[in-house]
Length: 287
Image (cartoon, rainbow, N blue to C red):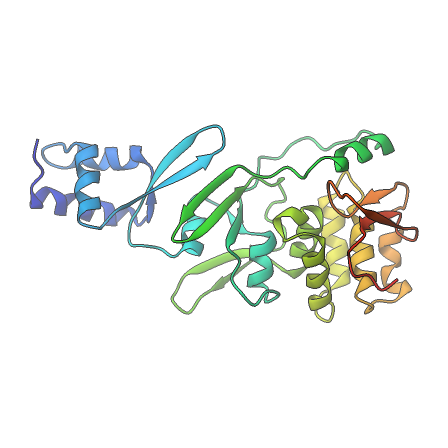
């Protein structure tokens, strides 16, 4: 069945009422079926693509692929937040939005939290830590490529959006991203999403005069990680040479009970006795 201009206009008007810029096929199908003449969803999609009012993107979820239909040409940052409800920018993208990177990163990291899970209560063992960090950091396989950018979709642990802030760009676009202290914790936990330990160290140095240690400690206690990431955080903070022994004492009081690692799968390492921490041999340290 051919589609006339009146039907296209009717479809577009109903589409605008949804006030959405990213749709799934079933949403388009539902609108098409409500239009007089009951349009073919495939034909209406083809027509709108031809008229450059609709663009198709592929969401690669690793084990499967899904299509999304984009209208009104949102920029990559806006699109990233539209792919999953309740999501926010994190890791390297949050570094940029917190003013710690000059250039926009090529990869956009956006996090959608998992449902709450039971907390891990088992005792850590050194062998388990060694084995976990001998392997490479797990990387999310969920991604979208759009307008020259790669959008990585992360499924982080449930934090009830701890430390998330909201700002509005000059063009009216609303951005949600982690604040400075939460971002520093996140990039310590997953340096692979942040450019690696060297870039993480640069972020700590660049933010040392404006970060709040009490807030960072509050976040750490709330997050209550299984692994002793506070040892890595203490190491990074010490390397900035902006904090005293007294400043860093609360981190030490969380415990120095294990040998820990600054990153996964490090080949050549050195060991910092003070924080019981292995770090890359080529990391520019002060001591």
